[in-house]
Figure 1 (tube, rainbow, N blue to C red):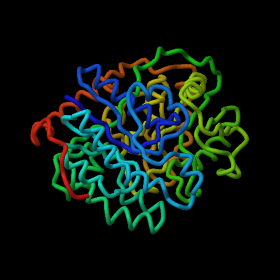
Figure 2 (spheres, helix red, strand yellow):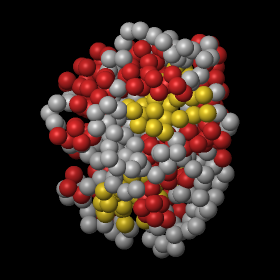
Figure 3 (cartoon, rainbow, N blue to C red):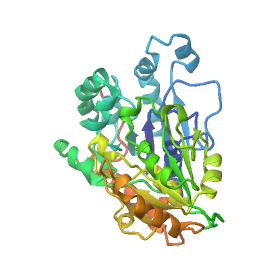
Length: 383
């Protein structure tokens, strides 16, 4: 197949999502398909993140410099609208058998016509009804009013979890439950040499205030206080957002892939999402957990894993999805951490690799493409 991966994800900074997308394209190509990322963002006078240029291209009409010059003009949203003809031309030239759409931001005029012009599948990564509420009333109302235009325009869904698929059952679309893979093959299991356990939690910057902290970093305060000889590394977040954090919690801010790998190499335990209940969700398949496992760290999780094997694996400690999940399990977490200090996960993780996960995704994409007819003309009207 020829697969166009459509998104609005910015490719100029390294991120777990970008590494995932590049890894997916690499896996699809390795399986014999022709695949490329088309990302609708303002172009910048700067190089893209490592790996992107070989796997994708930027489609945009307004530059980032123009957005910076007129910050109140909301040119980012306008850029998507005026870039639709350029996007349509690029897709027609690529002639995809199917468009795989990972949404990043709300609907915009012309998006629906693009998704209807070719067989298409939308990847749904979260329960948007819960997540949109975190962003305030205006965004929530706009997203709720328009999201059905997007999801109604595609031929099927790839949902990260069964919970998400259940929320989208209203659309009566074919849906596949396919979680996130490792973005590269598991590394060699090199122990840390630590005598006391060292921990890591990888998150994203706090843009909504601590009330929206569904990561649950604040829950680690009592655990860190109970383990003063251990170091708790927080990547992707800043100390200013967590006043009162114990002295043995180190906030590293945003780190690129190389810096994260260096950090993981000295840590024994990784924390997955700890407060998914704050988004009224139970099930997930976080990229950070895949990243920890790729680096052979044991993990503590506060949610139900979409990848069923991980809920019962000996190198995973599930602690439940409640406000007191860490506080009520400090003893269990300490015992688990000491068990895994200076050890690495040596179990077979083949079931999480891109080769295994993407085979299921490709099978579903092929079924949607066949159902809607390969080699569509790429001509459709409406928005």
